[in-house]
Length: 399
Image 1: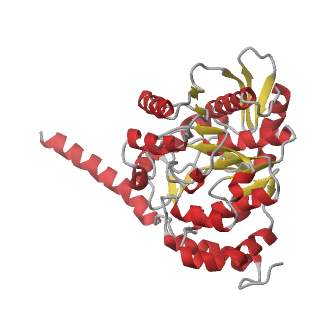
Image 2: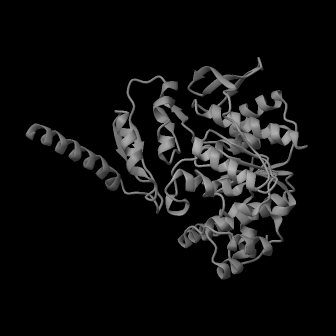
Image 3: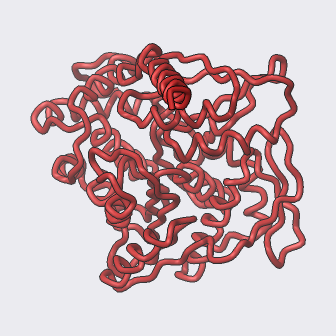
C-alpha cells in the first residue's frame, strides 16, 4: 500500500467525487497532462472507441464480452456507474481493485490539485493506468460526452464506433443533430476504420464526409436488417442472424437492442478483416449469454423483482424514454406505475410529455445526487400541460 494522504478506499473515492465540483471539462488539455505524468499508459494496449447518444454502453458491453470469451485479456471503461464506482473500470469482467484506486489517488492527488481536472478526466487516466498495469490486450473505451473533445479521445483506437445520435448535452455539443454528429464523429481517426449504428440520413452524410477527410470508411450496421427476433420473454429475447440457422439469446429486453447487436457484429467483422481477433458465431452466442457477468451490464429495462414485478431502467433522454411503450410489451401485467427521476440538466420536459402519453400513473422522485431535479420541478411540467389544455378548451368554447 502506498503511503499518502488517503488512508482508505472510501476516503479516496470521496475525494474523486468531490472533483465533480470542477464540472465538465470538454477539451484534451488536462487528460494530456495526466497521462504524461502516468507514463502515457494508453499507448500500451489496443483500444476500441465507442461513442453515441444511446446504445454505446450496450455495444461496448457486447464487444467486451465477445473479446473475453475469445480468450483475450480485455478492459472495459464505461460511465456512469449504478451502485459501485468500480463498475466503471473492468478487466476480464472483474472490478478494478480498491487498492489500485487508493494508490492511484495517493500518488496523483498533488498533481490533481495543480492541474484541477474534472472527475471524469481523473477516472479516465486511472482506467488507462489500470489497463496498462493489468496488461490488457484490448480495451473497449466508451466516451463520456460527445467525442471530439471527450477525455477518452486521446487514444488512437483500432476501431471507432458511433451508435445512435440524438439531442443530448446540447450545452456542449450544439442544439442540432448536425452539430452533435460532428462532435461524435470527432472520434474517427485517420485511416482507422469506423462502424456506425442506426442514424438519420443527415448524420450518415456527415460521418461519410468526416471519413473521407480522414481517408477511411464507415460501415453502417443498419444497411440491411440482419437480425430477426423469434421469441420475446421477460428476461430477454431469442433471435436469428441472416444466413445462420443458430438461435441466439440476449438476456436483455428491447427490440431496439437488435440494432446494437448488429453494430457489434459489424465491429467484430472489421476487427477480423484487419488481422484482429476472429470471434466465431459459437463464441459470440456464448458472449451474449454472459454479457451481464462479463460487462456488469445492468439497468436496461431490467426485471429486478418478480413479486411484485419491479423493472429498473437507466434511460436518460427522449430517445430512451420512447422505447418504454414497446419494452412493456415483453411483460405481463394488469397495471403499471412509473416512478421517475431525472438529472436537472437533462431534457426532462419532453421526457415527461412522452410518459404522459403512456397513460400510466407517474410518481416523481429524486435520486440521491446533487444534479438531480426536484420532484416539484418535474411535477410542474404536468401542471403546465394541464393548464395549457384547459386554456385551449376554454378558448374553443368562447369561439
